[in-house]
Length: 259
Image (cartoon, rainbow, N blue to C red; front, side, top):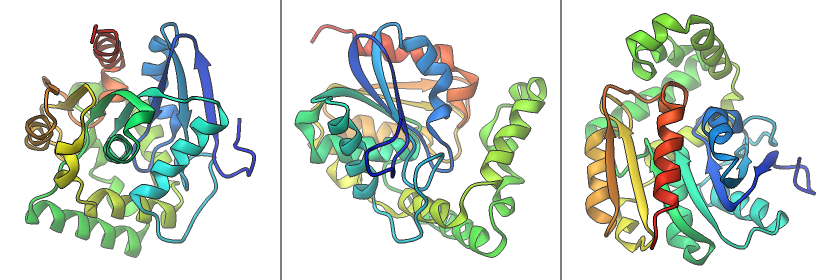
């Protein structure tokens, strides 16, 4: 499906409570496939390609967190979804934070998966370096280390074709859109608003995630009153691929808890 102005590609499937899933930078709505397949029997799942990603419209102009957040809301409006649960991965986790703070009445419970709560100066410097590498050499400049940074050793060894395909998708990304989205990922400071989130919240990240690390997850947990925290043992950033069953199980259990 597409929105009426043909800007945003999205899908909707399943039955039950509405659940909006938001993907990460350089990915597309298919990144949630494994989790969505397991949840669609219990939830009405709405997924969108972010602007400049997947099959959505390309964009070269500056993108902000609000650009992405408002696009999600537009898709919800078009589909008649008044309120929903919300789960975001990586950049999608930042968008989840923004939506929860800016439009609290539209969401019931939130899941923040492998996302970011502020950055140390050293971490910000790494993001700046990565942006420069993309500008100078395109996507191939940053994918060389992706195998080690994203995937656990055993998963990479056992799934070489899948890893090759994922890296190829990253290398084929629309560079201006990726740059803008990655700039949002690296420079947005939402940590100061986390205390404003009043939704029941589940925060998860991989124990070995180098980008969205446990320190950040613990910061989120401390600032979002009443939130739940789970550090996933032995996992890096590729939790949606490597642990889709586990992620789906945790999300379903959290969303079905009595208030």
